[in-house]
Image (tube, rainbow, N blue to C red):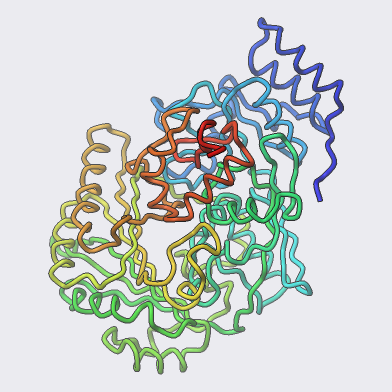
Length: 534
């Protein structure tokens, strides 16, 4: 069903008339339009922020993770709107479109290239921040929950835990991720080998489309519902809320972290991990966190095997003895705990942290960083790993996270949702390089080093295309230059994120947003007008 329009015709006529008053500022026009088109007026002191407001910078920076996009030289929004209801979101879309001002949308601020709060290709622009839309309603009897886009995945996990100790949801490992954008890219986590991605477990959604309508799954149709579950954020509309399917978790799970340095045979053990990680019991997720460290003046590479097992330590040790004895896991390494405590453990909280910390809703860690991603289909040989270590040693604060696939991930079709990285992928690599200050020369140096690392790995990762994960946005792959997005140019990065699903995403975009209202540096483009009837 489509939800009834709340916008009387005379108000829309009033809006078009208001556009002629050129002496008004864009903020004044927007506020007048907004209040005419929402059920409840916008409280300006708490929900509308211009650069003249003392709290503008605080709101802008509140959930943004990458300091690289908060430097003084970066473009800032003309103003920020923080909707308190879905009618506020509708009004923001209608007024942005009517006043022809570009709009960006932020749910959690984790987008790696800052696309939800910075526009380097269009000015002026405004930002709609969904941080105050964070309701989570869990229905254990129905095995489901409705979650608003501004909630973090940590809040979702906590609200499920409040109702049940044997239910969970298979999504992100970083608990401050905003659920709105997280699921639009796929949403992988420590239970993906058992249950797939977060996006694989969405059963309904409410979205505001380019005309300002609120649509549920039935009203939007299966093509659009398909596209928003993994097709990347902010291309098709504004997600208001998701309906997710809960999954069963054991009352006792087991976690461990075992670290091996180069001096402890790290290269050979990691070589073996590559051979077995995607074929292990699907209850077992072992990711590898690769960093450098210095001990007594000697720099080395460390590989930390960070794991969740959906079961007790006894069964875990049996599986490890049979499948991956090279790691040398012992009972002392294993911590039996509850699923919610495992969430905290994997996220890196200290062992005595209460689950209520998940309700804080945002991360306290911010750094300057650049990220990239890869998918690996064949084992990287030891020689290749040794060359990689040499490059990591030259970097300032390098980080790599290798996440295993297989299990359920290999049984879901590449075209089931837009996220195509399924059977045949052994693991995914997240590349990161971080630095601690905003100096341009330092940034350029670190960006160059991670690009060199990425280039070095080219022979060892997926090819034709060299695939990438859309939630690890990487503008090195290409960008849309303006509103008249070139489909051929967009294919350069679109095929890397979505493979053959890119073409279907373009068709959906052309149908639901032919005017390309929802756009950013890597949004899905509509087909050009001349190509739509071929």
